[in-house]
Image (tube, rainbow, N blue to C red):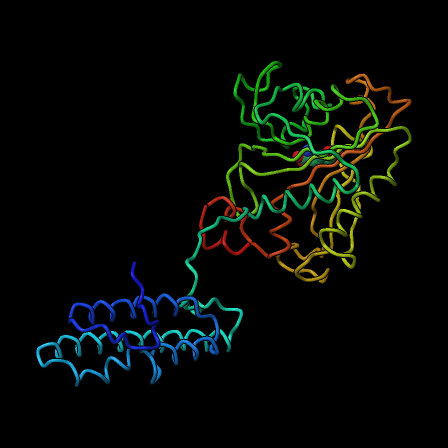
Length: 364
Ligand code: DAH
């Protein structure tokens, strides 16, 4: 491309024809705008202004010399020169605005960017409140050295009952309204596990002491649902087997668990209870979170809310999986997971967790 021989500051006296004049204007414009795009400060912008729009600039001189042009060349040249001048002036104003913005808010890009525009919402899912409770429970026990294992939801009668000291016709089977897959109650039948306790047996068949494990998972009961009962819900089983494990270990572990979940102040109560696979067995309750023990509807005016069953693993259970009960002892516990968020957040109907109403689920 040819450049203006005398430079942009001086009018080229040789330019006589209309064509050359228009060509020079075009070059001035493209050079000026090109230079303008490289300007990075108000100071540079002032130099640019003097160079391209100042009194001595080529453009202004052309405009001044219009009168000396032959009459037929004047209108076209005048119009073109004014167009160029307007475009340089508006470029100047825009640049000035941008640079001033950058001085006021230097962290913003020099580009035109409306930072007040709200961002486009990015729809992201969240964890289900029961999943969150499960994660929290697992992490508390993991910190105490327990490993997390999972097992089948379709279970053999043997693991769900027989191996846990609940033989056929044992009255404790009435506690578990069972969904059978094969013939009711018979040996070698399959069922939907009614609790996570079968994982105690499965784990001890596979592993030798020392054992510290928890087994979270879904369990099933053949029951009508109501505000406190679901036919499908979650439990977490716990098991520790080692030399000289005592009730003190069990109480200490569960106390720590309750402290982590419900805070240091919350009272914890241990009372005798019966489960065929532990001896002695117990029930653990915490002081009601709603009335702090004074008695209310939630705690049936007792001031306490039962949260789990536990006990020392029955020697027959240990012997059945080939662990010598004269050498080893252990404790076990099982807790219902939904109860925990229900107590914490005052949720009064367990069915809310599984009715898939986003207005409920989004709150957690
Ligand atoms: N499996 C029992 C239930 O579903 C809960 C339970 C009680 C588990 C005592 C245990 C235990 O491990 O020791 O009601």
